[in-house]
Structure formats: C-alpha cells, structure tokens
Image: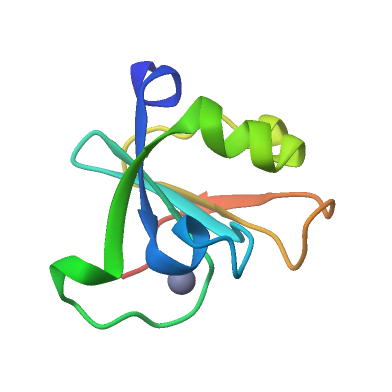
Length: 89
Ligand SMILES: [Zn+2]
C-alpha cells in the first residue's frame, strides 16, 4: 500500500496537533487520518502531510493496520488498539 509510504490527508486538528488521529480510512487511494470529530466539508478543514511525519509525532500510528480501499480503522484513544472494518459513510 503505497499510500502509507507517501502522504495522508489529515484534518486541521491533526495538522495543528490539537487532537490525535483516532480515525483513518482509505478512499480513492488516499489515506485519510482524522481526529474523529465532524468537519465542515471545506478545503480548509484538511491538509496534506507525509505519513512518516505523523508517525514521528505519534509513534503509535505505526500500528495502524494496512487498510485496503474502502476500509477504515478507529481507536478510542492514543495507544488503544485499532478496530478495523468496512468504511461506513
Ligand atoms: Zn479533526
């Protein structure tokens, strides 16, 4: 899965490091890493980051399962196990 080696779409909270990544999914080949909150559907809610930089800030992200297209993983807190399943819209 090349997405993990390259970039992730992150929400502004993860970008500003005010909230951790608690919800991730792959859609249209892009890895999305969000805080789990609801975000306004506007471009300024999201940023692009290197996934490796996210792991540098939060090493527990290295345990994120390799997600196929249309799959999601969520956790209740940093350090808790990821629960993987189909992406629900
Ligand atoms: Zn967020």
